[in-house]
Image 1 (spheres, helix red, strand yellow):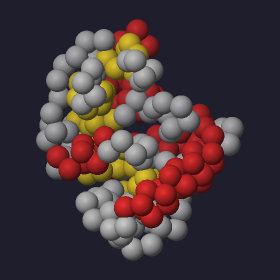
Image 2 (spheres, one colour; image 1 turned 90 degrees about the vertical axis):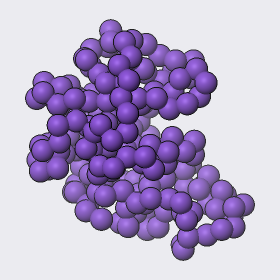
Image 3 (cartoon, helix red, strand yellow; image 1 turned 90 degrees about the horizontal axis):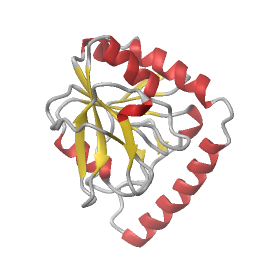
Length: 194
């Protein structure tokens, strides 16, 4: 599928793909092992090893689990920021001091956010780790449809790294002109450089 301007057609295609991709991901019974393999591959990357600071989501539902990766990054002396949605529905970022469960509360939607907020700003990290529902080999991703990561990536200068299970790959992700491809995607099977 090419970049399209037919909003209704695009919206329908994305909705259908989101549902299918979410179902595929939910069928995985060994997500912890697959997530651990993804972490191993990420930690082997030069771009990760050289990054002094990174931005990483806190996994929810059936996403690639990130807490062990965040814990290892903090233990290695890296600064780690995470996103959260404030009371006004705006995406904010906070540096993490710990990944311990007691370091987090949950917002009205059940999403984790740090207890102690230490503001972080785009440009302060070299690597952004991004969740997704589906991806293609051109580096395009399909998220949940709220545009949070579209806004984050639009203001970030460093590399954007998508975390996914191999079953989330599709031939082509429906996209719009403003969509930005990721720089690389890491699955349990491989590292895909775009």
